[in-house]
Image (cartoon, rainbow, N blue to C red):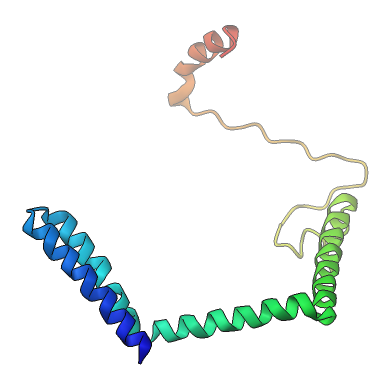
Length: 148
């Protein structure tokens, strides 16, 4: 009951200010003020004001528990440990090249690379040159000479 009265009063005051701005021929400002003034009534009618009150009370209770309950602090410790273990596993896997669970290495990740003999490096392919771009070779040389 009190919430509805406050919301209606806020909207009425805002609309009165909007009418005053319109009387002074500031129509753009009056429209903006009216738009903002209608928010409290709209929020109350949709039930979002009471929802916000419920959320604020829940956050307040959680914050009080955070301060006064050691089990909440232990929960944060468990979450932190979980994050640290996850990051360590990811870093260790990247450094040593250990394949993920399931084996298969590159094939399991979707790559179709040919198998190479141990100790041999793959030979990079030369890019194909476009005959239409051959005339730009001179320009490339000039730019390289000038360090661009």
